[in-house]
Amino acid sequence: MTEPDEMLDCRGQRCPLPVIALARRLGGLPIGAVLRVLADDPAAAGDIPAWCRMRGQEYLGALTVDGVAAFDVRRAR
Amino acid sequence: MVATLDSVYLDAAAAAPLHPAAREALGAALEDGWADPGKLYAQARRARQLLDAARGATAEVIGVRPEELTFCASGTDACHLAVRGVLQGRQRAGRSFVHSTVEHSAILHAAGAHRRLGGAVVAVPVDRFGQVTPDAFAAAVSVPGVAGAALMSANHEVGTLQPLAEVATACAAAGVPLIVDAVQSVGRAPVPAGWSVLVASAHKWGGPAGVGLLAIRTGVRFATDGTERPEAVSLPLAVGAAASLRAAAAEVDAEAARLRPLVDRIRTVVAETVPDVEVVGHPVSRLPHLVTFSCLYVDGEALLHALDRRGFAVSSGSSCTSSTLRPSHVLEAMGVLSHGNVRVSLHRGVTEQQVDRFLAELPGIVASVRAEAGVLGL
Image 1: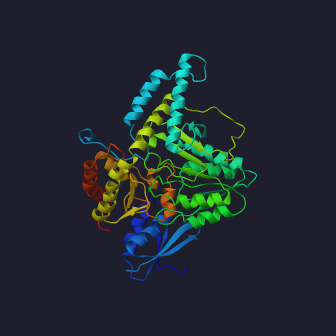
Image 2: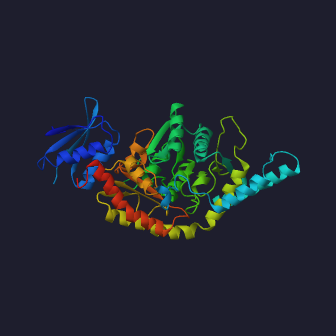
Image 3: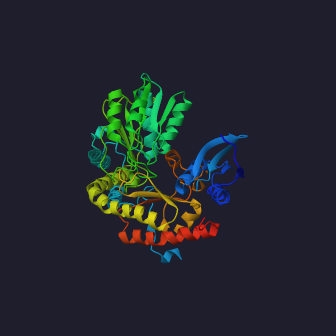
């Protein structure tokens, strides 16, 4: 997995807050940039890829960072 | 405030309002069927007659012989009995239980109990619409050591029908008994074929709460765990369940023809009028009365409260509305948006005008919840 350009810490946030934070932050990054979202809410695992699909952004996959679920998203447009 | 609004109940998939036929039969059975049907006097014989007639009428709708049908305390109760009975009855064939990832939690909990007893559990995945592929299910039941399988007729959260005919054929070819949880479809759609054990629940078709059906085909190896128990059902409730099932079965085609276009209208209009919404479930292969969608950036609980304030009773698979704070395993397995989720399920009392009022008000309600959260236009 490539190193992300930015990290977004959404630990402790419940749905739909991580997706809202992702939508806000990704819009401020240049096209092609990768944002890594740390989120421990179990809904994030489904909702982040679903958001990418609905918004035409590129979902790169999930990983674990220091025991916390993380999700990489590339700004595609 | 709410009292002045026309209250619109759109959660029939949780519990349908009592069918008039159920109310009438229940009242009559309370008057006439209060005696212990096992005793040897006139009142008992009357009670026995009522119970036998209820079983006969129910069995006829389900398509089984009366002796193949057991009344249970609920659909959940029937699911647990079905899974345990099939798996224990086939212990010598194997210890593995196959089911789809979108089964009702009653089946999943029974699977969990099986796992705790040392059994194996195989969950067959679903696609974006919530359907298993028959080939994948067939492959899962064709390996050695499978004691039983479970596949629902239709999903309780998104309404998607499963390819039961193909799966039943595959199970039969593999010699694996198939449990069909038909809780959401009985009384709403034709009773499926090809199953070994079928489960249903009266309060989903307009019968009283507290009656589940367990139908076990003759010849299916079914263990009762050495705890053979008398049929645990309230006689008047069983009579009410039977009368309403017969009534629901008689109007099943007409109601489906009336509700299906309303569900199609909800699917179309919601997608057109609510920004950033995902309508989920299969577009065609679906129950006639149930529709589900998810609204981006919306807290499911806030949305349910906002709808309730406008008189609309709906339900949600979003994690913030569940006691476990986990998103619905169904939406998770389908890979669709789980937050801001709304399930609308119609019944015989819902009118076109009520659906149109819901559709007229929904965009404004979603917008106001989004505005409150500061996510409008995000």
